Length: 191
Image (cartoon, rainbow, N blue to C red; front, side):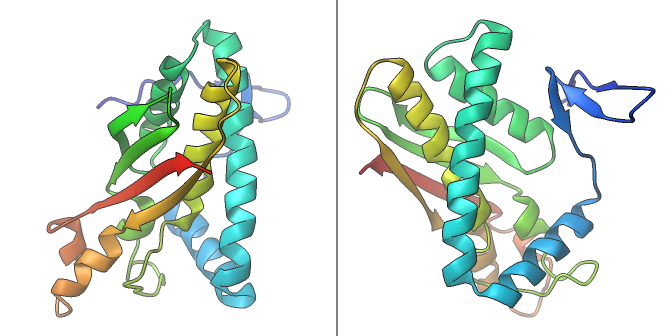
């Protein structure tokens, strides 16, 4: 996949934009280390729900903006969302299945940024579900699709499999996850 993102840099402000939305470009280890330390400071039981709400809101807003920018509708917006996430280095996102009529979806994430960063550049190794940042994204995008179609159905999303957990099968190899089972699975379902 060639990341052919339209990136515009304002020469006066230095602000990067893609499709009119402001962007930030940072090294992966920088972002992941900040994420890991914030979770350690406040605890996953507090941090994960906050990330879910923020991610949900952001995905919903993104879908609304991109639908208008590109003239997309329905699941085409959600598919575009997964494509753009894949082009931005978060991982490779794809539907295993999706049904906008019922609010069900299974999203596969290959090479999650959080799984690949395990044990690199100061990121501690964690063999649990480390990709909770993504959960709200998938329900936020699905709820935008549902609401734009006039449906009252709303969804929730959870990580049901994490590539970091799969890496536990080879504890002697800190980078085994990059070759064994590098994908995560998120399940979107109606509330």
